[in-house]
Amino acid sequence: MDMLHIIRICAILLTFLLFSGLMMTRKMPAILALPIMAVLMPLIAGAPLFSADKSTLSIANNVLTQGSMRLGATIAALIFGAWFGEVLKKIGVTEALVRKAAELSGDKPLTMAIIFFIIGTIIFSSSDGLGMVILVGSIVIPILLTAGLSPLTSCVVLLACHALGSLFSVSGWALMHDLYGIPIADMARYAALFAIPATIVYLAMVVWMVKRDVVVRKAWSMPTADTLNRRKQVNGLALISPLVPVTIIFVFKMDVVPAICLSLAICLLLARPKRITHILVSSLVEGIQNVAGAIGLMIGIGILLNAVTAPQVSVVLKPLIEAIVPGSLWGYILLFSLLSPLALYRGPLNSYGLGSGVGVLMMHGGLSPLATMLALRSAYLVQGLSDPTNTHNVWSSDFAKVDVNDILRATLPWAMVAVLISMMMAGYIAF
Image 1 (cartoon, rainbow, N blue to C red):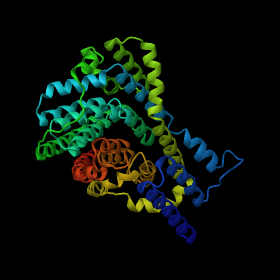
Image 2 (image 1 turned 135 degrees about the horizontal axis):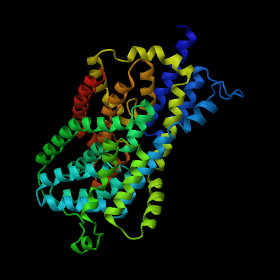
Image 3 (image 1 turned 90 degrees about the vertical axis):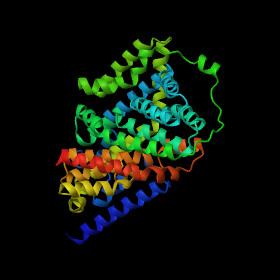
Image 4 (image 1 turned 45 degrees about the horizontal axis):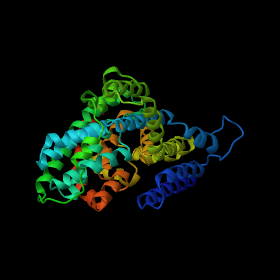
């Protein structure tokens, strides 16, 4: 390895650390940091910025232009998923599910927390955007506070069911398919399997926190009976709508977009709302608005992927990645379990941040696509629940008047246990 190669490795690592720090300290959002870093890394590695010869790799053409379109299928799945979630909200299915959960739980705090956890998981399996978190959280958190739970526990119940439900997010499956080539139907099967340890650990966390709380009644503005009666009345059969897309993909092995289109038709047939055309059009527009930030992030991830897979960058980083990639079962399990907190703050194990590029580099370093995907999906159990940079964590903590870092401290040990169990399963499957 010559001196120029060593200098380039050091420069790329410094760039990586610099932008990681900027994202972790919230000095720069990931939506800007990822594409800027994607331009700098191949530039440092010696790739030309422009080239008149289309056969020659250039940053302008191969990284920026082609990279911005690389995750087109994921972006389409994200838009259609947001559309479906917005339709559920407009026809009243989401609120009806939350009200039903409150009716079933009665006045028992533990029963209430568990039922909300189950219903919330079902809701967030079909839509996990911030808009849906605000809709569900603005109903669930006041009810749990009034039942006597602490603001911290109330937030954790909401965030735990969101993190678990997101394992079944079809847009997340589409991203993993685009990154690692795992078929969508297999992603559905792995999601169902790996939801088992997450469910057990998250539920144990919720039960422990509820039992730990001193139950003291709290005043909170709650909807009146008249208000509840004026809300949309929804056909009971329509309440199964959030599970329809996941079921169609799992059972019939259908692609994401047609599965969601079919789910929309089934949902509307079951609910039979008025002004269907208005609901569909307004839901599509508002759904796109809700995921606009995520779309920008996906474009940045696509650009980063093309940057790290550029031959110049791959050649520079290959020796380093090969030295890091685990070659044994227990090395694989321990490495990703102990380093799972690196999924926080858009870190190197976060698939919606630097992890997208790191995962591809690990595949180039010898780790199989399946092993890479399972490791990063396991790390999501930390990121989805505990990450202070998640918009849903920030909103929940602000709404319930809790420090977002208190949520991190309370949930991180539980999330790491869930990752450890998941990694044991992943090691058995991938090795």
